[in-house]
Picture 1 (cartoon, rainbow, N blue to C red):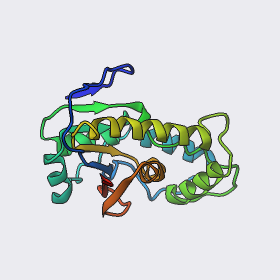
Picture 2: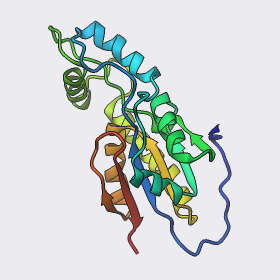
Picture 3: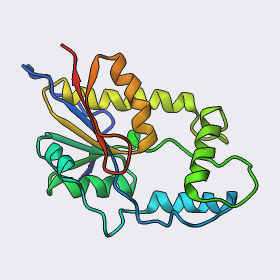
Length: 205
């Protein structure tokens, strides 16, 4: 079951005797073709399809992430299907809170000629976006502000003593890391950045 978080949900102010952990995971492998060769327009279509895709039928969560989920009190996911499906795969039927604050940062392709695979287009698009090309969509500065809001959503629960799991996206997960570190959250487990990978954070005493 998934639940959309109310924007003005009131936090429980009960006394907290411990601080929970925060686990931030990347989604599993989506059900899409990464071997196609496409031009700039084709990449826009491919990315739109990617954002609608759930996980590939052969995908399943690793035991380590299932163990982290079992220890979680709250499970968040972005509102994109691949993140929701990932959360569903590890939640064991428990409630999942979806929130658009966690969605991936945009990837508008730069005006580059030629046909190439989605991975190559992704590298070009991310570099161009990072350097300021946003096509009137969400800018890097705006995404950085959103990353601060996303971290605030996670830490609000963890500081109440809840262990938190987020299933989200590769690049936006990276954007949350410096925010967490600046607020005194230490990375105690580094699983890398591939599909199903995760990192766990604990508050520095």
